[in-house]
Length: 152
Image (cartoon, rainbow, N blue to C red):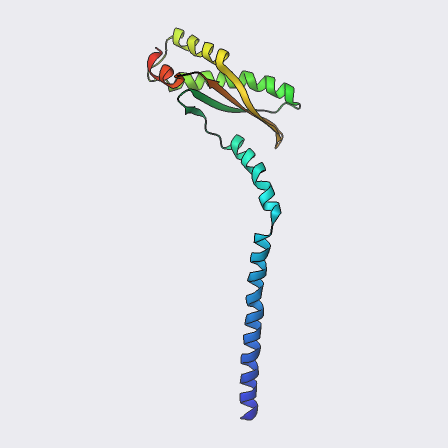
C-alpha cells in the first residue's frame, strides 16, 4: 500500500511538472511572434503589392479616374511605353461604359481627347513577379459628372 501511494504521488508530481514544462512552450512561441521584425519589415512591400494587385479602378474621386495595367516587357522603359497605350485604351473603354446612356461617336471622341490630355502614369512598380505594374490616372475637375451626365 505504501508503494501504491508513493507511485500515485510520483505520477501526480511528474504529470504536474510535465504540464508546467509544456505550459512554458506556448509562452516561448508567443515571444517569437512578438519579436519577429522580419514580418514587420515585409509589410510595406506587401502593401506595395496590394496597391498594384488589388487596386480600386474607376472613379476614385469625382475628378480622378484610375486604372492599373501591367507589362511583360523586360525593361522598365519599354514596359512604360507599352503600358501607356494599354492604359489609354482601357480607360476609354471603362469611361465609355460608365456613361448612363450609350455614347455617340462624338461622345467617344471627347472621352479619347480627355484621356489623351489629362491621363498620365502616376505610379509604377519595380518588377513584381516578372511584370511591371503601372497606375494610370485621369484627373480633370468634374470628370465623373461630365462623363455620367453631360456626355451624349
